[in-house]
Length: 325
Image (cartoon, rainbow, N blue to C red; front, side, top):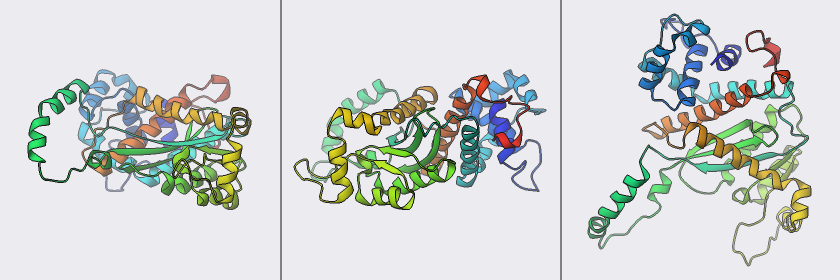
């Protein structure tokens, strides 16, 4: 909570509007949202938790506990894209100052994953499908079924992670399954502009396989992109230059290890950390709210990574200067 409050104090304004009541500052509410997400609580559950631990609120200068409606409205303000970008920029600057990026040692890894729209028991969902199978068949008789409807409604999160520290430096949120290539440029560019050392290796999975993505990373940004050329039919051979080169480069296990592609599993580890520590289900009822919940999970994950760094590699949370972040 102290780390989140200090981080937000250096990047966010105190209030979102000059006509606000000024009961709580945005950094204070951001710290409360971090506690809510880490403890896997709802807004009402977070309010009850903060009332029981009022010394946490006093530690960041809060005289009273915010209401659950206040936390819900603050989440809508803090989860805007501009505020998330400011916080990710500050986290990347902190990691660069404390040598926690490690892009000269290990590559930047990118991948995407689907999350659940709501909390549902697996046993309950299985029994419900089993009991309603006959009714669904009777209802869908003579109609065209759409098996991909559920996938098109699932939230999707794409991240670019420093394989050295599991710190997320760029993110993308969307809805529905599909190819990962459209958001490749956004992920890579946000990571490229945030790190000071802009000569590193970027490894992505086969979902980002496209000749244009290699041109974007290598020609426009000067990076070394490694993406397996697996799109298309298994019998078809790559006809473009970079995809054919990737086919030769990743042919053997030794070559994959030498080029750094074997570190791509670090991004899957980061996704697993998010789902295990913060949960794979979202509480938002709309697509916009679910995107905000995904961004909040990303920020909470980064704060947890920063908090767990050795004390010798970071300054004190309370006496840290602006230049540190």
